[in-house]
Length: 427
Image 1: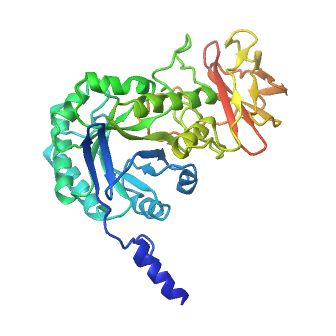
Image 2: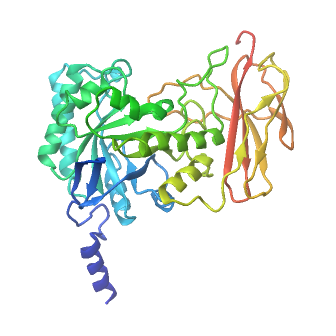
């Protein structure tokens, strides 16, 4: 009897006991333009994308109220599609297109043809998966200048046309780095096979709807990445290092970004993917990420849980104010500096404050490429009491960054940091 029930469950829900095999037909997804604007329909029902991109737990993401996850490539697509299907979620599957800054030549027909064939193979493999929502053809492949090279966009449109021919059940999208330069014209007028404009926007999220309208955009958009203000957008120290928002400031910026880019888009937006689901080293150890590397929940996840599910978590993350120094941020080798902050637990519970000094990465425009986490500098914290710490700077000149992590008893966290410079000539 138990085996019979299992087989029926596989047939009804499209779940196979064979790893990597989902026995089900594609769920059709289509675009519709109404008097109120654009709408995404999945199996005939309106579908607002409430998603995130990253490598964190899908089960935890679903529990937070999200309904979709974004992939940049197909390397782990089978596993993620299968798990998403079991959780009742969807997946925007990325077809990675090469960047010229990494050596790809869009004027080399052999390279372009090989890339198109790789895209064809991906579509044929995953087009019938019931968790598939959209095809995201490329991510910032247009580059970071004007982004209007007609040769690149011809290749993008050729792949999109191929995708539409092979898979009429799922719309095509391409993802650009913001919407400036020639990107709106390239996507909305010069790429007829692209259905949706995916836009990665951070500090610009507050004005993206207005800018797409004023730029003449006619297609719907998805905010494919949004979160804190980017490393390239923040004010810098005198030695050229960007300041970072606190986790509390970031949480509020997630809220404002979603409100302006999605809720108040006048029907242009089909939803969004918050960035980053999980944690990564990019700029700093904490710049992007709705959790810390140890999995601790930050305020950004509280905000997005409320947006996705309609209800804030019962145990919120602490709040933290920017770090304050007693003195200058430019110090001699071995100098001692004091720093303080103010942290509050919304439930009034006692907090633990951890101070850490690390080298500065000096690498802020990585294009999402992997970077290892930087090590803590042992012995740098010589005293920590209450909300204050005394730090001894290294003897080696160069840039550093002081972090303060606040944890509540449930493991929720807040974090702030400040750049410091040890002056003098490096040995």
